[in-house]
Length: 147
Ligand SMILES: [Cu+2]
Picture (cartoon, rainbow, N blue to C red):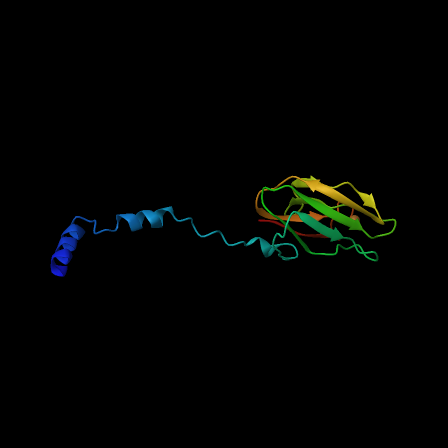
């Protein structure tokens, strides 16, 4: 019995199909390995993962600095950024742009501290972007991950 199956299989191998059709289809339809993120070559290189749609960030009361180097939001989902400007008399905002602050994707209203504001932001495509204060873009910025 076993011998007969082997023979049958050997014969069909010659015809180039020994039960491998299904497996081949599976292999072909499996998604390609996701591209490894190599976007950390510029900027702070900070990285983080989305944890809900209510993002929080503050400014330092004593320096031109944000409280975090990385913010993250889920892809294609509207989210909010609650910004606590803790800098007395200093205007800040939170804006989001492509890396290098080239294409602005979101521009937050500037608020003068101490004041907290909540920005409503439209969902974005997955990618690694940059957030920054448009008043102090070179001092106050970080990585914005959408995943
Ligand atoms: Cu600022």
